[in-house]
Image (cartoon, rainbow, N blue to C red; front, side):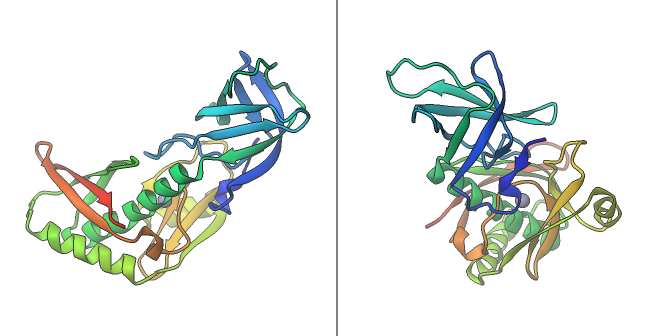
Length: 245
Ligand SMILES: [Zn+2]
């Protein structure tokens, strides 16, 4: 089972690991990783794996979770011909930080925005998809008062500006299942093999189970802007927002 380094430190940009398995010369499983696999509406990280022995680099073009394993899809970097990675190789992993950090801002912002529309409008969040330029939150809500969303945007920006610390707790799956009946869940990034569940708390605002990557403080989001509201029929609504610097 790969040790998931971003669970306790979302700011880890580089790490060292050992290759455990390579399939078709391009799907690599490591003993530990800080690369976030696509899940819970958050896109995967990209970056590089550099073989310690000869310094040869491989681009990490996709990271996914398959049968509980985090798999890194690699492609040779540059023109230099090289043999692929093999089990036992020591590697340094380097995360493409600009991309990841933007996803962390988007992800943490989604918690804040979702919480505001849950509390203020009584909406129920049904899905979300993060992007680098724009993110989407789906929710169900009967009465859809578009004017109110300008207020919700302001409330979300107040939470952001108030610099609420964001904390993590790892608790057992059993304990979480007991508690979760009382908590809302945004992104269920947990697979069945996971014995521990991570709770994410935005101090004074919300606590939920989430496997995504978060900022240390809401202030780092800087600001959000609601760009579009859509009716998707019956009670299904969709909201798009972007980040403001
Ligand atoms: Zn989260």
